[in-house]
Image 1: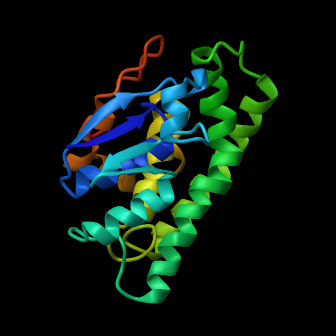
Image 2 (image 1 turned 30 degrees about the vertical axis):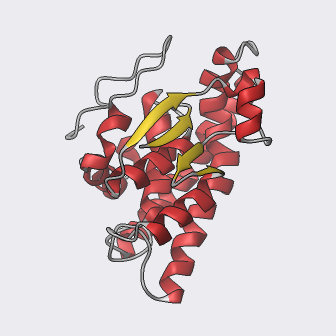
Image 3 (image 1 turned 135 degrees about the horizontal axis):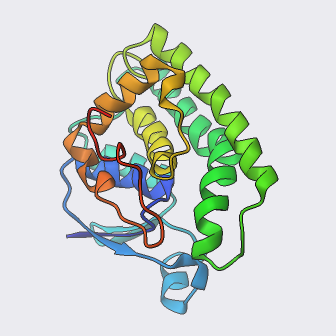
Amino acid sequence: MAKLYHVPLSPFCRKVRLSLAEKKIEVELVEERYWEQDADFLRRNPAGKVPILKIDGKTMAESAPICEYLEEQYPEPSLMPKSADNRYEVRRLVAWFDDKFHNEVTSNLLYERVNRKLTGQGYPDSKNVKLGAQKIKYHLDYMAWLLDHRRWLAGDTMTLADFAAAAHLSSLDYISDVDWNRSEVVKDWYAKIKSRPAFRSILADQVSGFRPPAHYADLDF
């Protein structure tokens, strides 16, 4: 069985978990206190980051190459389109959420509100929280624009781009930092994606000291 070293609210870990679950790959989840940087952990990944996936006799780090590996080795069901143009668009949007969205929103909301407490770094920086709350509006509006023109974020079929976006938004939804009333089309998209069987373990996550809102695991909001 595959083994994934993860942190429950990490969007990068969630993206890998969603890919594994969608492809019906059985995996053992092991919570990793990455901030303690113990020797065993650093041997698995000298970069000192999660996720780390053990699969097929290999130990892999970094969510993007892990997901690409899973797509190539376990191609069904596919999370990447066939054409080069469409594959580019998926990769562009995955980078958008894992880079731009992460830096502007996730790090300013989730990391300030949750990670600081978990890692013993003190209280949230209110300026960062305020900035993240402002920036998420722009990203939700951009998603709404995409979904006004497409069935899913990158096109007519669900792809890794949808999982990347859902990984970040689900982590933020756990701490009530997503205004689902801002866009009906984004809310409908999220309701559709969180209803998938692959999302079940995500919605079952519990983080000590933080209780999710009542709608978090409600498939109909």
